[in-house]
Image (tube, rainbow, N blue to C red; front, side, top):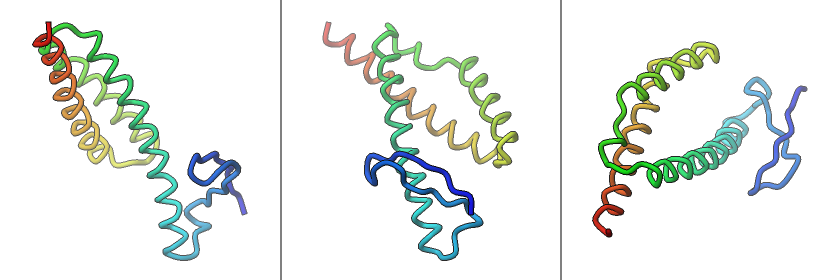
Length: 117
């Protein structure tokens, strides 16, 4: 049995992660999905801190929408998805949704800052 060690704030250090083939029950699979979801949320929170910082750096709400940057990110996501044997269309949809949310979030921060001056 091959397992990997992870550190989880919620479950403590040295939590054993099972590979998909090692999961024997629906509960095993659900526990691993829950573990991954916790990790994804932590990564989204980390990413959000950088998006917030970017909004603090930008000076005009129109800067939040950068089509060239968006397409460069999407291209990278699609390429990485293929490397990971993940459906690239699904990954693109997730990232476009995330980017759209971030654009609106950044615009809101920038606009509020401009109004408060």
